[in-house]
Length: 150
Image 1 (spheres, rainbow, N blue to C red):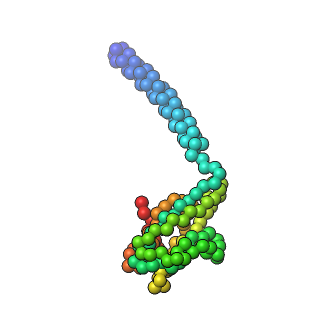
Image 2 (cartoon, rainbow, N blue to C red; image 1 turned 30 degrees about the horizontal axis):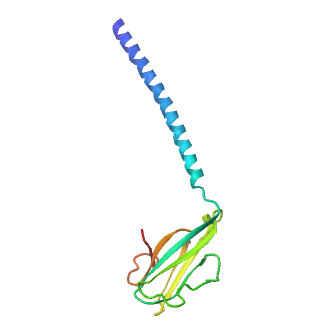
Image 3 (cartoon, rainbow, N blue to C red; image 1 turned 45 degrees about the vertical axis):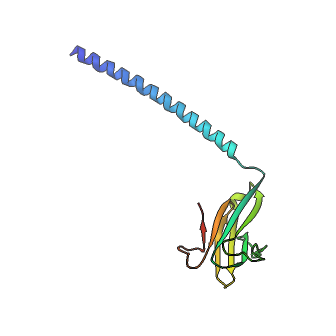
């Protein structure tokens, strides 16, 4: 009986020692993870002027006559990026610049109109770099007339 008590006591002491080491390791790991996360956030923090690039592909099957990207809170559409006509399968690149402190709140409207009068729009375009297909009415499978490429 005395031998069983001693074995139990020794096993308990070992378990306690192991769990104490585990806590220390977990605390060290947590501290290291937090330090790495903080360092990564500081390194990736944006500052100064930033650029969003929208690469727009005309997959409507016809010429796009009007193409705009403008602030969602504005009624002024600004520049028509297809003023000279955007042929089918053509690509237009539009760049927008803003200060890093403002980009989280920026929302644009994207709208287009083809030579036949077909219109498409997307009203929640964010400040980002992305490729977007302008879809024909036959290719629309969701709520919008555009498709983001991945």
